[in-house]
Image 1 (cartoon, helix red, strand yellow):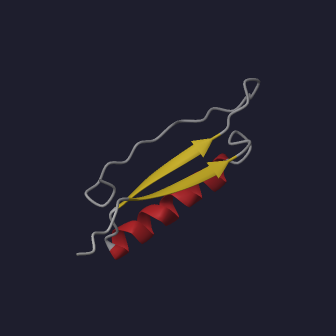
Image 2 (cartoon, helix red, strand yellow):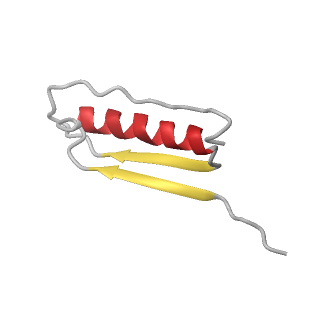
Length: 68
C-alpha cells in the first residue's frame, strides 16, 4: 500500500526588505497554483530582514483548506 507523505515547499529570500514586492508576488503565485490544483502542501516563506531597514515589512499567514 502506497501512502503519500506530507509535502512542504520552502521559499527563501535574502534582503526581504529590498524585495518585498517580489515576496508578495511569489506568495500570490503560489496561492493561485495551490488553489487551482487543490494541492495539499505546506508553504513556508523564510524572509531575511535587515535590522537597519527603513522599510516596513508586514508578515502574513494564510490558512485555507489547501494549505493544511
